[in-house]
Amino acid sequence: DGGITQSPKYLFRKEGQNVTLSCEQNLNHDAMYWYRQDPGQGLRLIYYSQIVNDFQKGDIAEGYSVSREKKESFPLTVTSAQKNPTAFYLCASRLAPGNTGELFFGEGSRLTVL
Amino acid sequence: RKEVEQDPGPFNVPEGATVAFNCTYSNSASQSFFWYRQDCRKEPKLLMSVYSSGNEDGRFTAQLNRASQYISLLIRDSKLSDSATYLCVVPFQGAQKLVFGQGTRLTINP
Image (tube, rainbow over all chains, first blue to last red; front, top):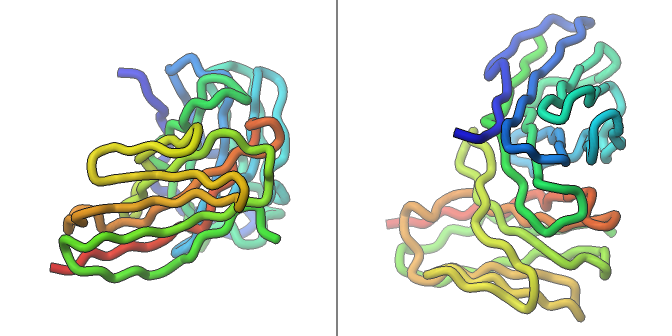
């Protein structure tokens, strides 16, 4: 079945460590997105990518980095520079940037910094 | 002004009631909009798309008011299973950037 796979589902990290969250899609979508959600809050955009080897900062990109070397993969690295990284991270994809299609989501990754 | 704003609620309504909530947006160029439903600790799932003046799907009706720059979601004959957080999504920057509202929490009481 086509979909988006995020891993790991749960992750614990010590302060000062970088961690990379995986996002893979087999929907043949061009556009991919990373959002962060804090308890009781909406989703805030971290980074998005419209095509391979290109990505743009969202509203809260500081302390995060991404790459888009392959169409199906859009990993997110949470660096030690991110001051408050404990959150629910959601990856999403869309058929093509600028079209009217919906976002499809992975099941999310919960990161806890100890 | 925030790009997308929603009343966070919570809305507590009895089963069978009709409930409506709005989402205002700042970008007058936005063309297509979405309502997503999110259950506790789960990923959001698409509820409805809104491309023109409105859309209806069973008990759910979404409407778009371009002049006042808001979209609304109406739920009729509410069920216990409608309890969730409802998120609106608005496109910016030529629909390349999708911005979420903070969500409206709805609880349907028996």
